[in-house]
Amino acid sequence: MNAPAELLIDGAAGPARITTPAPREVWWELASRDVDTHVTQTPTWLDCLCATGPYQEASRLYEFEDGSRIVLPLVRRRRRPPWLGAEESWPAEWGIGGPLAPGGVGPAKARALFDDLAGRHALRVGVRFRPGDTEVWEKAAPADFRPESHMTQVVRLDGGFDTVWESRFHTRVRRDVRRAEKSDVEVEVDRAGRLVPVFHELYEKSIERWAAQQHEPLTLARWRRRRAFPSQRLAAVAAGFGEACSIWVAWCAGRPAAAIVVLRHGRHAKFWRAAMDRELAHPVRATSLLNRLAIEEACLAGCGSYDMGESSPGSSLAHFKEGFGADSCASPRYVRERLPVSAAERGLRTVVKRALRFKDA
Image 1 (tube, rainbow, N blue to C red):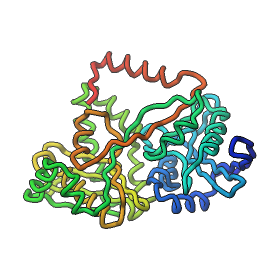
Image 2: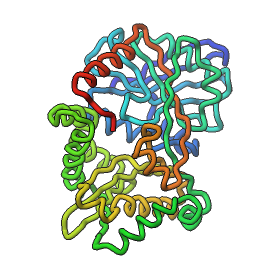
Image 3: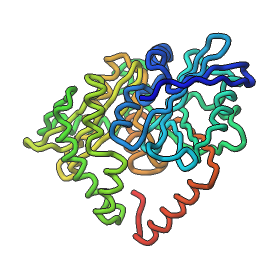
Image 4: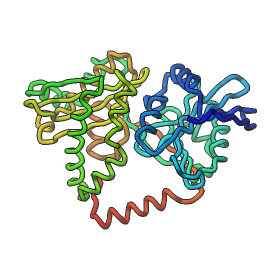
């Protein structure tokens, strides 16, 4: 890692010193004091993903005259000049990024952060904010930062598991869980990375199923999925997070049927990945059972939320998550581009999908 660089800016919030990359001890301190810090805003998350993808750290620490500090997790593409690259918090598939600021951020400091990012030489600069932070950043965003609508589905855990089970789980989910409990399903949880190969075995079966559903050539599906989720990434996350990474596996007649990966930091638990052998898992509702157990464990650990991630509105996946009482929470992304790169990428994807008669699952 390069030695930290410092610079001074003078904006609406007064003079501020910026250090990049942000010193880790300061980042961890702010992460421990900001009760809303998500798993995906920690240095561990950044390290795991940079170690398994073409990115390097570009995090920024903002220090203001009144003593307040903000850390913005940020990465840039390796081996690419700034004018052709992107600086993002985070890239697609990485989840929620955004600044850590214990006690919140006022309008002047929010604008100072945006002004600093507006001056970056990168072709694209993007920040995805966590739920609950949207109002102040929406008001502070300059006109050249375009908002992109994103939602994340979150189960509130206040009241404990009995409340979540009785008041938030849908009747169909409680019925599915009871069905799984009466079936020949054995559940194993691993916190040392031992079941990583089992997850990948099921993930390969999931790719085949998704390709068939979407009318996508299997070779293309494998290339896309492995590019977004490299084979070594889960092992890196399991090693980096240690006991805070749980791999839950449901076994049917000695064969792996379904698996989920749940990460935890502070009061937040995150349902990160899932995979299954549908022929084995669906009849016994194995995935519903795994989420029920993971949510109960999160409640016992004192977590206040179980983040189930983003899914397309109205999709079967969104419907599945809603069954656990997941609320859809706005988590917008703001992007500044010097050239219309995103529009060109969307246009190219549309052309390819039409050529393949691709069907969004």
